[in-house]
Image 1: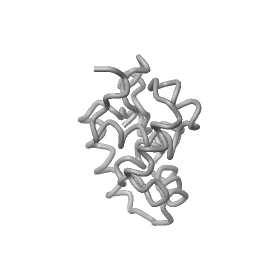
Image 2: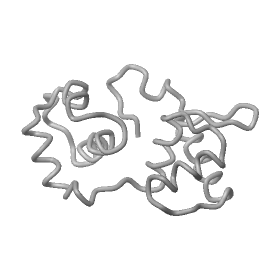
Image 3: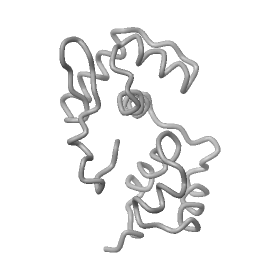
Image 4: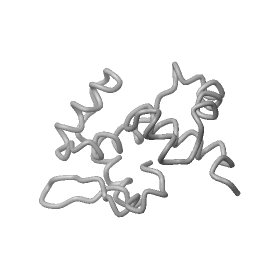
Length: 124
């Protein structure tokens, strides 16, 4: 399998990284894909309207340094213009913790960089 042979789910994760975290140039270098291939994937997923799930957006908030529930709520509001309750966000954080993507210490939440530290695994 070459780096260009990504599954549909992997292509979606790569596009999420482009939507929320990396420029096209950074993304193409990170995953070893051409700009043309990225363009084709964007067409496949109708990238103009492409958004991550609420879970994905919580990962983005953590990855970008929002580490309290109120800060995460504000980050989500900036991404999708919706206000979530603390209970809704806490439920998502607990799920991400169980997946090994988030960790909690002293009431603060963090993206667990061990999840993608090798640069070869997806942020999401």
